[in-house]
Structure formats: C-alpha cells, structure tokens
Image (tube, rainbow, N blue to C red):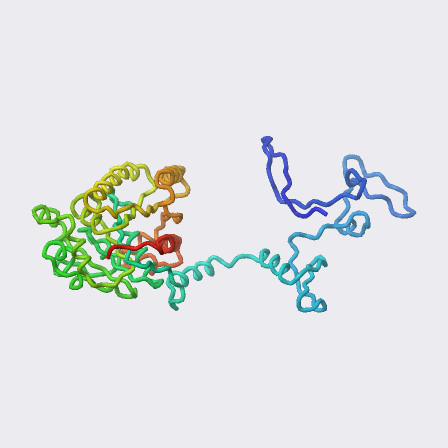
Length: 399
C-alpha cells in the first residue's frame, strides 16, 4: 500500500509544484474510486443534485472492506501495555520493534525551543567542565594571520579562534603585531605606552617571557601586547642586521610551551608583516566576502611566495577563512565560489556570517566566545577552530 509521499501538482504557471500528499491504493481491477458511494442494502440509489459531488467521509470510507485507510503519517506512536517491553503499537495499530518505532517517534517530536538550542551551544562553546577537547598538534603550529586589506576580520578571527582553542584544551599564544593593538583590546590585555610589548622584543631584543601576559578568565591563553611604540618599529628595523628574522629569533629563544601561536599582522606588507611571515610555518588569510577583498589576494600570495623562496622555505598558505558572509546577497555567494575555486580545500568549510554580537564583544573587552557564546558568530568561530584543530592534528611547526 502506498505511503505518504511527494505528489506532483500542476502549478498556475505550468511549472510542477510539489506538496506532501497521502496516496491510497485502489482495489484490484478498479481504475479509480467512485465519486458516489454505492447505496446501502434495501435503499434505492439517489442521484446527487446537479453540480455537486457526494464525497464519502473518512469514517464512511474506513468502514468499507474494499477501501482500507492508510495509516496517518502524523500519528504519534504510543506504548501498548500488553505488548511486552520490546513491542510498540502505533496509533493506527501497527506493531514494530521498539527501536524502530522509537526512531519514528523521535523524528516526529518537535525540536527544542530556540532558547534551549542557544543554551546548549553556549555550554558546548564555554566548556565549563573541560570535558570537550579539541585535537592537539604534535608540535607547535605558528600561524601568520595576514591580509593587507583592512577590515576583513584578521584581528577578530585571531581573538575568537584563539579563545575557542584555549577553552578546549589547547595552549595558545597570541602575538599582537599591529600598532593599533586591537587584539590586545579584544583579549582585555593592558597595552598602554608603559607596558612592555612586542616592540621591545623586536628592537631591544627583550625576552618574550618578560612581555607575555596571561589572559584573565581564559585558561591556557597568553598574549604579547602591542603599544603605539610599534608604529615606529618599521623605520627602526630598516637599519638593523637580519631585520626580517628578528621575531623568529625572539620566538625560538622563548621557552614557552604552546600548541598554537597566532601572529596578528597589520594591514600592510611592510617589515612587520615580513617578520611574521618569516617566523611562521602556516599562513591564514581571512577574506571578506566582497569584491575589494579579492583584489589584494593575488598581491598577498605573490609576497608570500617571495618570502618562501628567499627567507622561509617552510611557509605555506594552509588556511583561508571567509568572513562577513551575508547569505542574502548573491555577491557573497559569488565571492565564496571564486575563493573556493582558487584555493581549493585550503578554504575552511566554516564561514563566518555578519553578526552584530561579533562587533559588540570588543567594546566589553571580550571575545564573542565569552560575550555571547550562543550566538551565530560564536558558533561559526567555534566550528572554524575545530576544523583548524582537526585538519592540523598531524601538522608540526618549527618551534
């Protein structure tokens, strides 16, 4: 007997439309159901009035032996007390194994309310019990997060991915190499002019252990802040010996034990960015889902190739993250297709949507992971961090 399925219906414009319908099998040899039920025993047939069709009620149809009624697809199965512990009878009287009917029942139950779903996501992201662990790499992975175009989400991605990894069992260091110090702000790390910062590591060769700060409220997360003094480092580094590898030497001499090091670069291709590329093994490129963001990608990849050829042969673009995705626009979809066609499987499956919570979090000195862990932005960054950890569980760094 046919069950509930898709029934093709001719639409008003001639295109097929599909809706859910219930197909009832006809008796053997019958072409179709009669429009008028047969008259009862001893009662003469009465023709319906002109222009009307006498349709039998479901109860009348159910009482006929030649036209049984299909079990309603929306009927919820119920337990039968006399059926034994492993038998369930459906609302229409059909029996089946307990596990099979339970799966049907679960598929028919409504989903949890939105607030319950958000609370469940928040608990998963904050991980207060520490039970959820992301894979840890066998050696330190050093990421240079770079894109010479500003406003594409470099700092936001560094902060939120670092927090997500740290909340799930990884030891993470964030190096703020942008004179604006936005990563330091997002992690609520002091970075005024009197604070030792990454400038001292580059120019005066101060050990990193003297400038690194633990991020309050986030275990396993540390930050080397940037102050406004870093703005003059570009000029001061020009005349120094081995100016391109000063960050690498400072990082190699640091005795910290980290799973991930994220270097947040300024929106330029100057000496600071070159130092980050030389000190890294992997490059993460955040790309905003707009046309201008695509224009600079070719120039960035060319510079990365130059650094790889002359200064750092181990450097490679391993991760591309699409940010500020607006699913309401065709442009975002077109940019995504172009980026995936160019970079292939190096583009993360997780895409970061436009979300106001992501923009609000820095004003409170927090990442979106702690500011609103149940939001779409937090969920997307959590998925991106998990994907990075899963992809690189067998990748080793040089530190």
